[in-house]
Image (cartoon, rainbow, N blue to C red; front, side, top):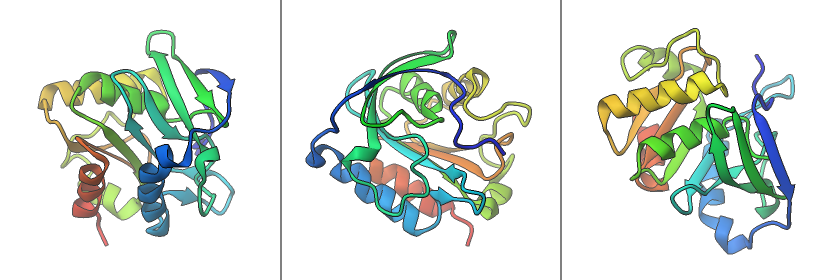
Length: 196
């Protein structure tokens, strides 16, 4: 498993963190997901899971790279993705940390679904197994964090035209993505489909 490693060209401008009031809502939901074990860290030290919210058409706030294992995040653990290019496999971000390794997947959802304002990526094997190929599922040959994954996610959203939904990442064992018109909706979708 290669989770936690950035596979795209990341042009990062290190800056001061956003004010805590700007990260409070996303951090609240990230904490709830971490408490449920849906965002976290494997015994080998590799982190998993991330969460983002859209701030404007092309700008979104996302958890930083390698933050999955941190029990409680602060505003020092979030960054802004300001632009992205799938064909070049790159993005530009600014903040105290580099953007998550799944940032291009989040960007693909925001670009293809204008009403989506939040994306949650969790790892949960029972849920992944239960819904594999029952809910919209990516091709098993497509790896996480790749331009192909971004395009596959976009294709699924274009075909469904849904403003919220769940996508199973077949080639990314345990990986499940939810998106919604707000962060509560995306979180509720995760809980609705969670296999105990």
